[in-house]
Length: 370
Image 1: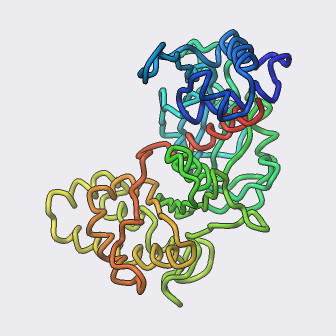
Image 2: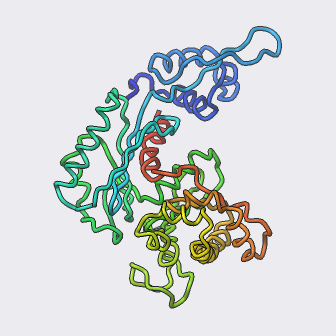
Image 3: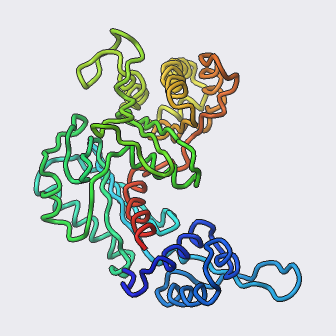
């Protein structure tokens, strides 16, 4: 971590400006932040010594001497993300630029047992050893789960997709020697997409995997709601008295738009479904067309409620770029105010968005704490 003697207000503000703008000159920093050039120079020296910034190229001259630029060092710190699902375990490594440096996904059936958590810790250690990281640069480990997490990021208040005990944090802490927190998978994925967009506008993220979830991000922060249950989009009713959902209710979006509604036709292999779809198989086209009809109802409802962009993510969302024009037309028909569905976007992170978002928490925390 950064030496405490460096953590002045100017030190942090200068770093944040360089971080968000990618590069800045001394003069730009002084003018924007309203501080003197000697103060800027002194803090840039400290930032350089701490390994957080370095000199970039020279700006184009408008007459006279070219001004040197300073840029942040992406690999000055790292964060690890883990995504736990019913049948898989994923580990990702990101830097301060949220670049996905490496990822590992393995089939590993979840069990709330000591042997599972011991194996999880062993996989993390093997992953870190493979990259030979300076452990002083590791900010922390974010763990995403298909569960509702309390504000303390340690306590689970609701979980049915996978059976998790309320003491999972303590169980993991027994085996994992690094600082870590728990995060909802859909919220984490939405955070990753929002951060990458660099937009201050609200963004709705719709997670379309073996379960359906979502998040609402406002100015780079997840809106949690009063009971930390905001954006449980998978359980909004789109067909009254319709199919039974795993939650026990009927007509939920999850019952119609989880990835299983497609992968069940190809023995659980979603990639095989989309391979058949892209080959022109008429039967699979009809199935996917029906899937998109239900999804369009949900997406239009989200647009009516939040009036912002809707990003389609998860395992199904990662394939939607190829069908986005067709889907936008379906959603536009339902919208009384707009003739275009351009507000519907396909996700940037085609894989491991939840793990990236969980890790991104530590990046955000580090940047804001300087």
